[in-house]
Amino acid sequence: MKINVQSVNFTADQKLVDFIQKKLDKLESHYDNVIHADIYLKVENTSDKENKISEILLSIPGDELICKKKGRRFEIGVDECVSSLERQLQKRKRKFSAQVA
Image (tube, rainbow, N blue to C red):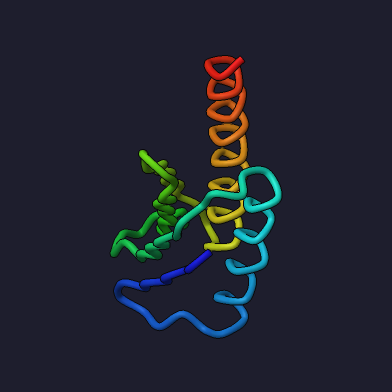
């Protein structure tokens, strides 16, 4: 799977990029037809402590799955997005296998 990480209003360090890569590699164990993932990391200019937005756009054949989370740290947002995308992929896989059978 091809992974594209874009950070807005800051520069993402290599540790964060490696963390994202590791988390997204787990998605391929649930659904092997993932084409690519676009990750957008944004920092809002607010006084709120939860100002980091993690957004993942996952491209699969015939569709795209999107998840967006806001939190204190990017790692937490990415982790929550990956969990949400895992559920979406499992649901899609069950639905697809029910149509084929």
